[in-house]
Length: 421
Image: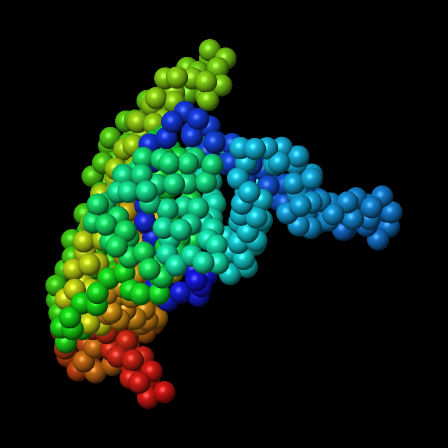
């Protein structure tokens, strides 16, 4: 059976775990072990960076650099430098996944400018990454080290048989989709509210969903903050603003958390040992998680509906990370979930046989969709202008609908060029 990366179809599945106290301890042990591998690499490479400045003149620094390289060169060297990684409770994939996470951090720094990898601190959240292994004769994911026992139980490394909860529809689909399917990376996580989850990366040689029938329709969508999105047909999708609706409740819980933290410090307690503080912290985490789930559910419904009704969807390829640098709009942009919506559209389009094209947002708002005239300089539209009239052809435009029409036109040019090649 081929590796996950070589298979054409991929899906992610999230399940809730019900762990015993022994299982929770194993998650904590492996989270700490994986974090220590990452921090070991960060610390050694930071020291090497500083020592290289004087290594040409100080022989002791050259010897130290050689030693640091020897304890970070491969997984065996790291385990010898950190002997507790040989413990029976530590998963065999811990070192390899820690090294991979460190390399991914450097890759993100170079490609996404996320900053130089820094030390990871211990927190209320815990993450343990492992992998599912198969033998040469395996044909489906029921033969791996991670597998479903039935609809409510799953086998996991070190943890054994664990009770789990998830969508019965998705689990039944996976149980009937065994042939030519395998599980790749497995992430066991404790969230800030103290609940445990497992996410499975599943790949297959055959599609997980049947392609939706073609409708012969296409549209462009313009993302904004007044409405979540406006399409080229003049329809608007409401921006629910889930965070803003619950902001008063969050602020009240945050003030309570601050008071309990101050009380714990006055009593000489560590926050990790302050029961009232931890109780309030979990309450706040559950509220924030509820808001995130509301937003995700809403965006999932919207994206599924759009993919069902359109064969081609065009949208702006927004750099949301850069837009969040605007401190006046950062909270509203985060609350809208633009990037999540675009990602869901792409995922569902791939799954159901539709097409999503992301185009450059340059001049989509300032261009007349009727004659192509571009407003520039002092004639550029301010953000407050919701309607405008083209000075060349006299066409009256609604700002967001006009932008959506320009986005669709750009996407059609892209598809026409792809068809010619």
